[in-house]
Length: 103
Image (cartoon, rainbow, N blue to C red; front, side, top):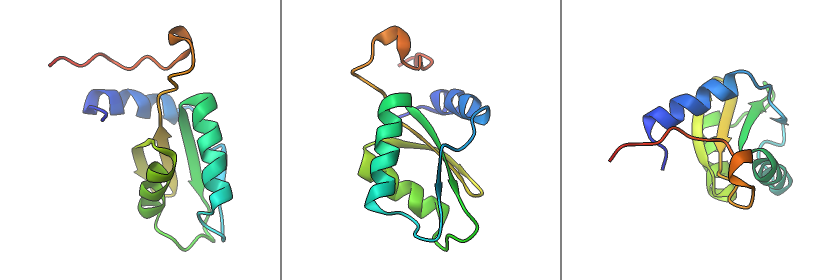
């Protein structure tokens, strides 16, 4: 579970990125979910665009994708979705370094 500080950090990283996957008229399919899963494995942080011709709610799509890919929704703004999943198989220095939380 991400803290608000970690979420804010990931949002700042995602702001610079362009969507690498776009969901259109077909909305969320198993193939799209598999593509998102692959992208999360490679990048950890993925920005997804929901095109105008997609009739489904971006928040519902984000929640469904998070469950399907075992990731976390960082944010949904308009028709943009940002997901994060830590890549445990990458060396630590190649992973996104989240701010440390104090308990």
